Length: 112
Image 1 (cartoon, rainbow, N blue to C red):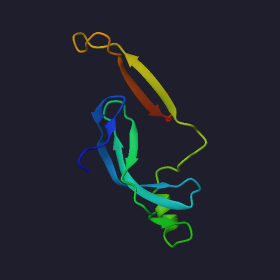
Image 2 (image 1 turned 135 degrees about the horizontal axis):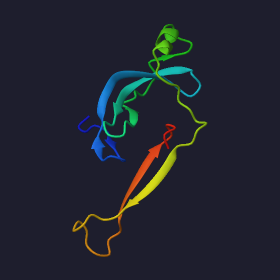
Image 3 (image 1 turned 90 degrees about the horizontal axis):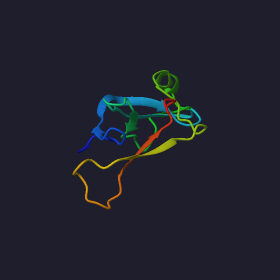
């Protein structure tokens, strides 16, 4: 990957914290693997680089072992929170008549 994921809230590249980060799908029927990235500023975390197919499915041998290493289960019951924050333009940074900078943050991690 040429660039690491970018934290929208902090405008910083995120750092890879773990390769091979296992998680369960919505119905705990399969285990998937991706790379866990974290923002050093706000500590937001994302999983990227998820494969096209699961590592193992519930009917396959080795599922219980992989499930014991999974970090979380995907959820659909809690909607994502979207917050738009308008910041004033920096002094001398914008011409007159231009709209203020808008930052959009996403999250559903309980800190919102």
